[in-house]
Image (cartoon, rainbow, N blue to C red):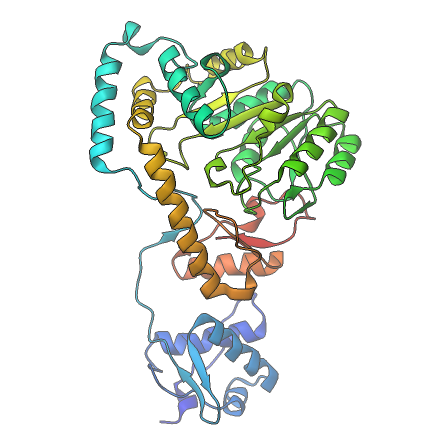
Length: 420
C-alpha cells in the first residue's frame, strides 16, 4: 500500500495555522495505527500533492512533528515514525503548585495525636483567640525567627493559609486606595482576591529581579495607588528573585508615594541570595505573609500575617467577620509538625527535588528556557501570548492541564509565556 494512502483524506478543521493542521493530520494517522513505529513517511512532495499544500507547509509540519517526538529524520533515508499510538494516561494537572508529600506518615500520625490531646483540652471547645492561641503564635514566631524573619507572638495573626492573608491585607488597605500594583504577570490568587474586593490590579514592567523601580514609580504616580503586591522569592509565575538592592529601591519608591507593600514570602525557603525580607527593611510599611502550604503541607492551611504595628487588631476584626480564626485542630497539627522538626526535613527534600526537576527541564527544553540557576517549584517558558494559549490547548488534548497565560496577566501589555 503506498504510504500516502495511509494518510487522512482531509486536514482537520481548526483555527490553527495550516502547517499545524497538517501535522495534526499526520499524527492522527500514527495514533489510529495507520502508520506504525518505524514506518517511513511519504516524501514531502507526496504529502504536498496528497493534501494540496505547498512544500514549505509540509516542511513546517514535519518540524512540528519532530518537536512533538512523533517523527525523526534520517539524512539520505527520509522521515520515520518514532512514536507509536499514544497510551491513555490520567490527567496531569500542572495548574496547582502543590508540594510533594514530604512528611513521613509516622511524623504526621505523631503530630495528629499530639494535636488531638491539646485540642481536647482547649477551653470553650476551641473558641479561644481567633488570631491563634498564645502558644500557637509562639510556635510560629519561633519558626519564622529561626528561618526568615525575627518576630514575636504578639506580632502575628494566624490566617487560613497565605491566600486568606492576601485577602485580609488587601481589604485593610482598600480604604487608602482601590488600586493594587504588581508585576505584569502576578499570582492568580492575588488577582482573585483583588477581584473579589472590587480592587483593580495594574501591572508594571519587570526584569530578572521583578518589578522595575522606575516603572513602579511611574505607575504609582499616574494611578495614585497606595498598594504594591509582590512575591520576592520564586515570583509566581515568573520564578524571579529580588536582591537586597532592588528591595531597597522598591521600598524607596513606596515611601515616596506613601504606599504600603504586601510581601508574599510563601516561597522564602527557596531563597538563594538570602536577601533580607521587605518586612525586615521597612516593618511599618509592609504586610508580611507566609504559610506552611508550600514548605511543608497544604493539609493544615496555616498562614501567618504580620501587619504594620497598630494594625493587628484591625486584621483580627476582619478575621472575626470572615472565619472566626483557623481550625484549632489544624493549627495544633501544624504546630506539632514544627515542634517535631518536620519543616527542616521537608524543605531539604523540596530543595533537592527542585534541583533535580530543573536539571530535567534543562535537558528537555534546553535553550528555550531562561536562566535556571535558582531553585524554584516552577519555571516560566517565554513565548508569544498566542503560542502560549495554543500550547495550553494542545496540552489539554494530551491530558496535561496548564495554567492559561491570561490567568496571571495584568493587562494587554503582559508578555506571553507558560508556567510549568
